[in-house]
Image (tube, rainbow, N blue to C red):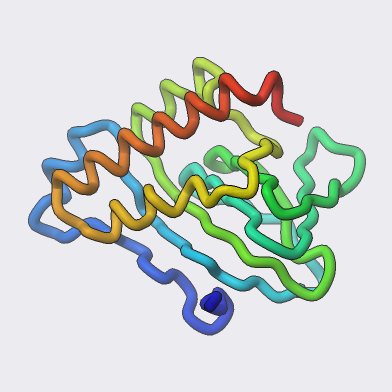
Length: 171
């Protein structure tokens, strides 16, 4: 069953226990938000927004729209689509119809910045597919031990390399 994002806000806004923050911050990548199977209702009017961190979203069902300043109009996304947003990038996305369900991960750090500089991570729409590829990362990060969080970081990096090799190029 999906959780409503609008009712519960961040499911796990800071998955890092205080005792291991210093150790994890030296790893180069920090997962700062996790959303699992969250149902998002259509909000009118939609608004432009940006994040202070990177975000990857996987549309699980329903349909959504996505826009960034490079685009002349919104594009409509179906289940299996993903959205990647880099820090401070203006975007607009939301439910195209009544609602959609998503998994998403927010993250930051010098490793993410290096992947962005190498065009492994870039803004836009990517085909993630029907398999919930963010879910194993979310589940690992929720365990919240240093070892599990470090492994979740590596899993997230690996996902970006997989998407990079699969994508051809993002919109």
